[in-house]
Length: 324
Image 1 (cartoon, rainbow, N blue to C red):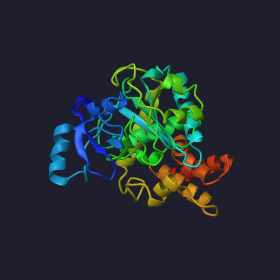
Image 2: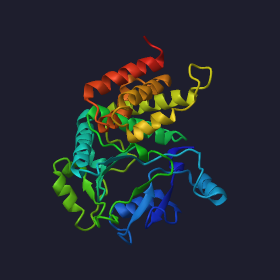
Image 3: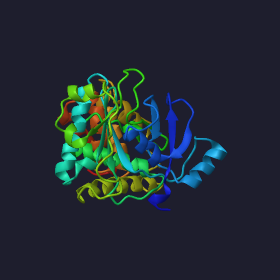
Image 4: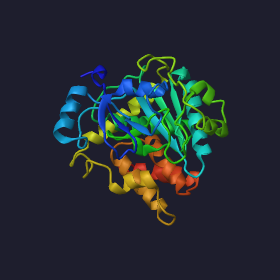
């Protein structure tokens, strides 16, 4: 099964709890991105794509829950959010796009940037030029890829909760129900020169054509980005291969580790929680660099000083790996 088989998506028009429909992912996304959709009302589309025949068969038999088969994507999504100060999330996304342009000699006109209409920015990186493969763990690899990129770019506010198979993301040129602003597409080359106020002001205007200069399948960056994908894929593969008796008594991360990544920890317990999370990642073969990428944002949001964070993660990973 190759990427061309993954054409199905899930669309919701109205509130995300509303009725879901199987759609042609590319047609649905492009119609909204170009501003040609019949309506600019609230609408959502699955972040990932599914093999059409197999997915339709699953939906007919089981509904939209419980799909465990392979997925793929035309764009790797990154979502930067900061409810208390959206300008911080906008700045983080801007720095990330600039980093990619410099690090990978990227043609950022291929990158899709949209203001969410509320508290942040969506960045979609086309898969063209990256050697990826559809699979059940594709969203997990996307998560690691995004976390590593943001770590090296020195940016925070990445929402790591979006990387599951059923995740819906707000459509470009659809209206946010609370703010009334559009999720407006912005050319990446213009976005990197804009301040937060100018970005937010665009959401109060009309629909815009955000069609990128290149198709998602065209090469748009150098091989530098491939190393991020390969490292993330290697980590996910090692985690999946962990079985009882092979150096770990568990085959999945502790719930407390996942909770720390999602929510951080309160003062008084944050040091121990961070150490335990880093050790748990170390048990599954995570490098110190990957552990920092996954844990840094939650630790910083918990109020920990930078040096304490890095020292604690390093010690935790060494402990988890059984190193002195």
